[in-house]
Image (cartoon, rainbow over all chains, first blue to last red; front, side):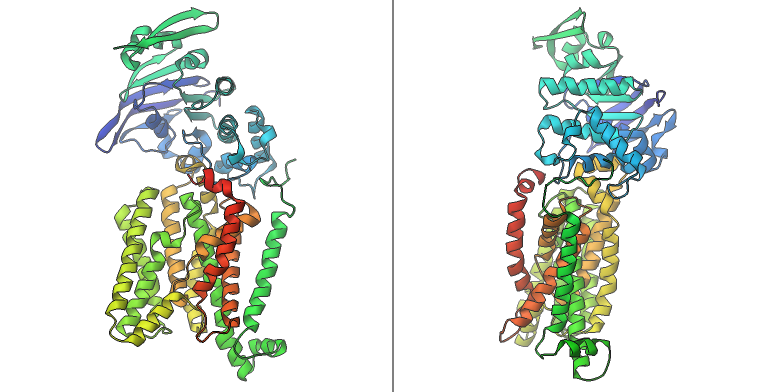
Length: 260
Length: 344
């Protein structure tokens, strides 16, 4: 599990005559928390959907441990890659524990036909995301922060070596943002390859092992936070003016204005 | 605990017991349907007639009441489970078979046959034409939107097909040269199980059973769709296959149902809501109870039309709506949250 790598090889995507991704070539190191950053419309979510094989690229391919992901059956791929999309709305009021059991579907488990091991995976995922107390509540009655953690638990319950999360901390308060980032960091430390799309550059700098910056469908740079997040680059890509300081907590970002 | 049954709502009765109650009421209604009719028969006469003999009781039981009861059971069942499957597929509590135009198309096929004078309302040609046009509507739907269509495109195309079929039906009625044919068409369209034979059962039930089986087998897909299409895909569900399997099954099953019973509305919409009152909102778990609720609703309506004294028998389609609306209102009140935030 600790050695799983993911590689986007020359991935391009055309959607409705517009090129969303231009020959993106990216390697993701194992057991790391990768933050994917970039302005709106940079192609982050599209790249995540391609990595999760929910969307087929126009050209190029995704390799896991050197082998094409598209060559796996739907169930095999689902056991290897857990994906949490941006939309985390549950369509029906279902109990939390049954919803998290959906994460065991790639292993052939359902609420009706789950082994002890499946229920253990579900309960562990609920514990790790600190929502065990909500197990029997109804998903539609939960707050945004609770719902976000339940949905993460659903993804964790699969126990896949790769975890892809799209904007996991959007619409969360600062406390829950921090909590969520800690959870993702713990997963990476436990050996999972985690890729998270983030808009909060400070949290990306604080928690991510590696940062990938995308702009207009191209990779701008990939590396650690100090390499990637420079005042000049943030001005070029995001059109924002920032001051950066290195202190004992890591890299500190303060936005001072917009670049005209 | 590993084995306990998590529940969203703390109700007094377990879902298992409620389902058992549903079975019990269904059996009672089946018996009531077999024992109700213009000719009063005792329980003993009815049972004897059902199993054999060639007296009047046997004729009434086997050629009038048994086909009628079986058709109500299966037609109600397929409408109920179709509604549940479509609501699961669309992630929307308002979906029902009429959204995709299959029942309207089936009705058009049948009306065309009635109009052309090729067959009377009780002929074998009628169901075949109705099933044919329902399946044709599915093929047209798929030709319009393609296999990878979005839900919105499907609903819009279904709306177009349904509207077209409805308009074509009224044009056929307006153009009909003789008033007798018009009466026949209008009565047929209101839906009824009157005067159906075992031949009708034999014609429609195989299609209905096949459709029920196919829809029941897709339960995991509907359940995964609770999280949205991307999540379902990432969990290993082939969403576009799930979609065309569901729509084709609904077209086949509902087409066969409309073919023998006429157009009966509202059951497909209400039955899943009744099922949710019993077992919760899980889209897989409501499939079977929705089937049973649809059957029950249809049997109740069909018994009622036979009990109410009227010059011509009441139409079952009108009664399902009368019975269904109070249940529907109860479901809306119970699941207000569903309509507030769940209908994404």
